[in-house]
Length: 172
Image (tube, rainbow, N blue to C red; front, side, top):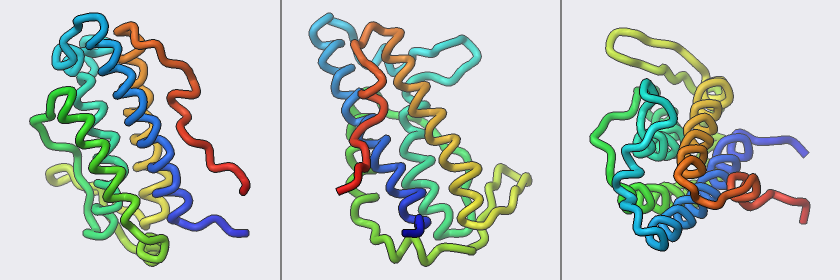
């Protein structure tokens, strides 16, 4: 069996987005039970020079669905704010999951070999669709998902590794 571009991109995105939806829900429950304002958490950072939780969660969507949209358009750029509060972030992840589930494998696999550029102002980095997804999109996607998870952990949300891993794609 060969692994397709769809498997490498959307398959990975769906697994981690599902996990993110779960750990965001666990966070919301924890904050409600402990009388913590989730919108204050949305502005939390691991370190002063890092971007806040809201940016990290927004980037989970941006580097998954946004990356696919970027490949289709031939250009992808950095995320633009403002970024929503905690419940808006949960809705964003739910919407991202739904939109990615609606994309067919043929649609994604048909993007193989397509030119795409990361562009920030006058700075451009050229890629093929595969190299963009594997060397730029997926590493950014996992970086931001991990950082969001870690911020929730620092806020006392009882999460473990399984919460990050999501639903495994096991042999059926």
